[in-house]
Image (cartoon, rainbow, N blue to C red; front, side, top):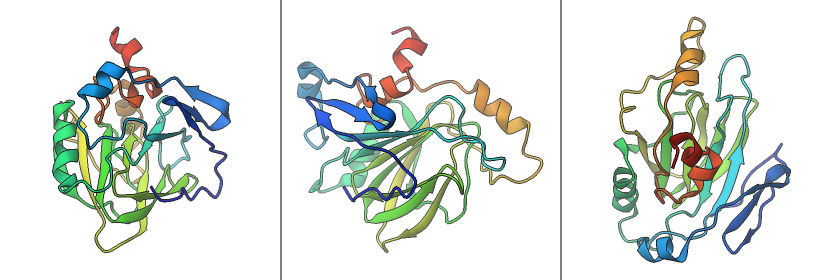
Length: 222
């Protein structure tokens, strides 16, 4: 995984036996059971680096008031012969549908009626999340970013071979495309507020880090 470019970030993390410490000394209690690890495909990284970021509404990009951006570093191991197919199949297996292959637009945009996952299968890119006041991150092959509805994202630069697989929780495939134009509100705010949560993590299923970061188990009563 490429070094994180965080000009304003205070994020620090260390991984010990699968437990990940996030910025602001906030612990994400993500401990994979040996049973789940044994069932995971061999191309998955069992202990990915995990970062979370909360973004405030900047008046243009609403972001999400409750859910953080979750970034998994090298979630899919290097050296996989067909990484794009692996990522796409993982998304579908875990109920994230409407998959597509492409790049990230070079302008700030967001989706108000869908959460989104982006899995980088080749190359690298510098992406700004959260709008003009957000964070700038270096994303490379194997990294996965899970964006709650409303989260702004924009590609600042990338390698010529950069590519991602995108996906959405089943039922949210007909996503909108918003850019912060006047007139989008208050509809987009209501969309974000009332949007349902996904069932499981798009990469590791019911025991993935998204379960804790978004409290999916509690929300679903699992």
